[in-house]
Length: 231
Image (cartoon, rainbow, N blue to C red; front, side, top):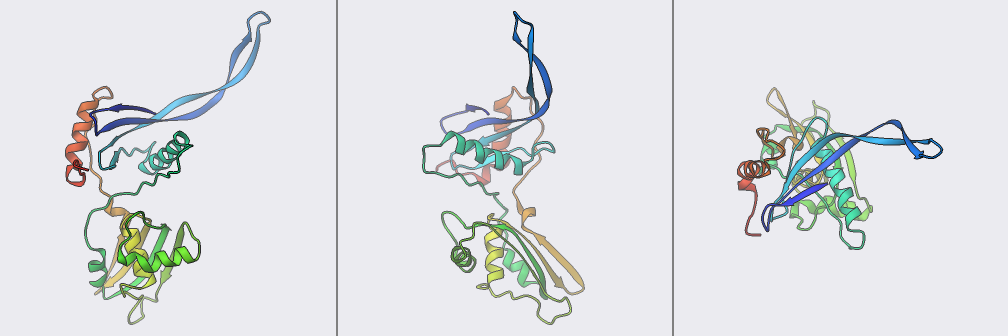
């Protein structure tokens, strides 16, 4: 990983990804002309990112180095570089702020909910998280996935009570601590909501690798309304 301090609050950095190549011959002893096989890693792709003063991270997402991969690798590197500190890093996607409960309440009925990789919030849980987080704590569960299905011909479908297990899990995933896929019926229309679609993202023009200030400026302009600079 390579990084540069842009100013006292903003950090620009790059994480590199390699792929394993085949074995290559390396001269082990010049006197005896003895060789040994070594494996050489070849550069594959890199991901550029910016860390802002409120700990917001804006990262690139590419076919060969996705944002999901970035999060996984960043967490590994962080833990490797902080072995003597009692601290863990957790990265969650920021999402656009629309009320998912309002959309669900507009359904005639909710017929299916899929919950993927749900985990407890940190550090400030909302009241709507309480039902599912108590369940996770009681079951000593670090990650939870589930599927809830109602017959599409049923009169009411799945419960939409805000204090229910299902709605609590949806609320937690909507805040970025997992993913939920919700299917509802509205008239003759079937509506599908995927909380992953709410991830805040934007297209950014390609900037030359050596023009770091241009890249940081573009990223800052694109996402300024989501960043607190007075943190």
